[in-house]
Length: 185
Image (cartoon, rainbow, N blue to C red; front, side):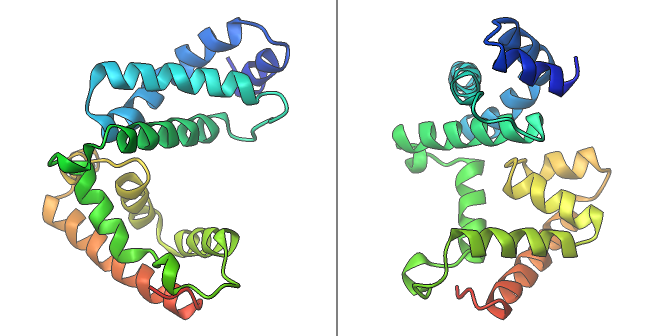
């Protein structure tokens, strides 16, 4: 079923919206949650919460890209669940991703008062648009979808070292880009 028809079902308050969403995007949402939570029951609950949040927000929301909308909801719910359960003490791949990301993003205490979330979001989007497609895919897979480096390498038939070096170079370019834009790290 087309995304526009699924969104219509949400707007009509039809219960078919949930079943159609699950059929089309269930595995996608589950994969996002699993890359953060690493627990099947937690992921299933997170995906169900995603459907509830979508139900509660449509209407008034009418997303342009349903997959991105559901992905964002799932990711945010999984991150909230992770923080709530205080999983930062466990040795996880996601903790490694957070460490890598913390090197790139600005420290809120050092940002000028005039800088805001919108400026940061625009800078991130602009930086991503400046990357070639392969580098952008690797970067987004790692830092948005929290995919393991070995998984990215396998999916794109690349050596693990190539993916690691691409990520390292891109993180460095990203830091430099943010500094150039006046967003200090």
